[in-house]
Structure formats: C-alpha cells, structure tokens
Image (tube, rainbow, N blue to C red; front, side, top):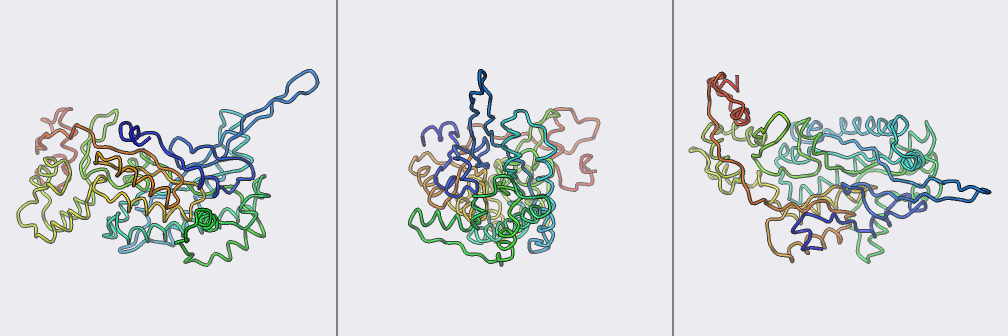
Length: 418
C-alpha cells in the first residue's frame, strides 16, 4: 500500500474503526468508505426487492449524499485575532442554508433522495487556514497552530450543532434521530472519548466552552441533521475567492495557474505584502523568486534585507513540502475531535523512504483521523524560468500576458500595474 501511495498518490485511506465508532447514525448502517474527497463518512445500503404476489417490488436503498459549504476564515479576522462574533454569525447562517438545500436539491437517483431526506446530513467546512496563520504570524506546523486549530473547531462545532438543534425545534428532527448517538446524548467530544477508551489511550482534549446549554437543547428538541460538519478540498472555490485551499498549506510561493483563458503566474500575496513592508519588493525580488521556484531556502533576497528578516520570512513562507507533516496531522487531529464527519487532508512528501511514509500514516491513525487524501510528491518538472518585463501594452503578446499579470509591484512605469 505504501509503495502504491508513493508511486501514484493513491489509495486514499479510510480508517474504518474511528469512522464507525464515531458515526452518529451508526444504528442505521455501516460506514464502508468515505466519499471521493475523503471528508464524508456516511453509511450506504443496497436496494432490495420484495415479493408482492406475482411481482417484485423494489425497496430503494441509500446512496449517501452530503451537502457542503465552506467558511472562508480569511474573511473572519481582526487585526491580531479571529473575529469569533462574525464567525458565529456565518456558521449559523450557513447551517440554515445547507439544511434548505436538502429540500430544494435535484436528486439523480431515488437512493440518493431516500438517504438525504431521511437523515438530512450536511457538511460545513472551512478554508483559508494558511491565510489566517500568515495574518496571525503563526507557523502552520507549530504547536500554537495545533492549539488554535482545536479552539476554532470547538467554536465552529458548538455553533453548528447549536443551530441544528434550534432548527429541529422549528422544523422537526430528522426521521432517523431516534436511536442515534445524538439521541443518546453523545456529542463529537464524547465519541472521541469512546475511541480513546477502545484503543486504551488517554483522551488529550477537553471542552473550553460551556456545552451544557447545547446538550440540554438537544436533549429536549433533538437534531435537524444527522451530521453537521465536514472539511472538503475547496480547490476551485478557494481560487475564486482568493484564499488558501481548505486546511492546506500553500503549495508554493509562486506557481502557474492554468485556465481556459491561459496560464497565469500566481505569487503568494502575503509574501508580497511582507516584502513591501520592509521595502524590498521590486523586479529583482520577483525574478529571484522565479529563479528559485518559490523556495525561500534558495532565495536571494535583495540587498538591504536584514538577516533577521531573511530568517523570519524563510520560516514563515515554507512551502507545503517543507512543513512538518507530523504537525499538520496533529493539527488535523485537534480539529477532528470536534467534527462529526471528516477532513480532506493531503500529505506532502519529498522523501524516498517508505519508513517516513509509514510513520506519517501510522501517526494519522493513532491520533484518531478517519481518512487521508492524496499523498503529494514533487514532480520532475519545474516552473519555466521566463523573465517578467515591464513592456508597453501594445507589445504584450498573448504568450507574455501570463507573466506580466504577475508583476504586482506597484511600478508606475508598468502598464499591468496601472
């Protein structure tokens, strides 16, 4: 399995023990696998046929469906913290929107309609995590980032579950609520405790919010949705709104984004901002960034940048492959405590050792993750070393446009900047 993962990035792994032990609707069926993107953990059932006199009548089974949305954390920041009031408001609105989707959706099969309308699962996720860490001057693979990951997801979980139980009071509980873990008073933190007991390990998570009000409300009014949270990849929508994908670190500080309109050279906005803050973002800085393929460990900073700033920026803008993968897994585990489904967690590998891969995947299982997504390996090719020039607009050819748009240096002589 490790050899195949190393060669192809597949298979995507589902750990079936946490996926089922922590499944809120386990009385209805078995979680056989995740969905394609590894964040949805719901049961499925095959359709069956029953004899009705001389004819067979089909009883529709269940094809698991989940309705997804993602909160952009980049838009929920103050000068030096997370804007929790705004985040609460967004989560509450998003949960209501996702519940509405179930009723207005188009279903390609009756099995999908049957599953979705009976259990009403939704998956509220998040994106822009690396942008948030940049903003807070916090390394993504640090202990502080792990702690903040748990804190934010406890907050999101609190208000997602709270909103779902309020919807249950308004609109009624989902039809298979009776017998679920919610019905038994078991929340995500409780199922995490059950997993720890099953594995004979101590639980390393505690509640920092007062959950008693939510627990009491669920006890009285039930839940509108069998599941409420899941972190999806968000590759396309993150690019549209201009934030980091999902829970992912930025792949690189410079890369080519290909669309039907052409190839566009993209540069890390936060890096540009920090370079401007020290007065060092110019054509030379851009050319040097392209020359080193966005790897700041090989980057030649412009003259005048202090050693302290160099070291700070090199550490802050590590590429995805330079992040401590064990720390990224631990941060995902801190979130997983509070999530009732799963996460699309990519891992990044620039090693050739199967032992290092084994250590990563065993750590993912040990800390209670339900799934992992792609294993990303470095490609043999690198970004083309074309030169970004300031040219007159009429001289820009279609082939040059993809590099000119990357200028972003507020050069008064540059037509692109103007």
